[in-house]
Length: 38
Image (cartoon, rainbow, N blue to C red; front, side, top):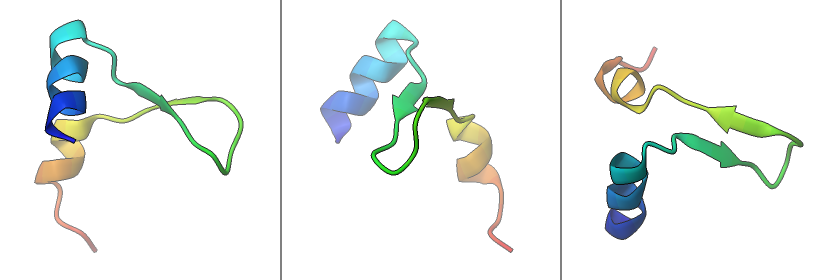
């Protein structure tokens, strides 16, 4: 997981694919991490 995160941060690729849905997705990781869960 750490290697994937380092590569994502270095190359700037912040998209991912899901196995349960078609398409490519993008998340604002820092905002998700800082936002409290409801």
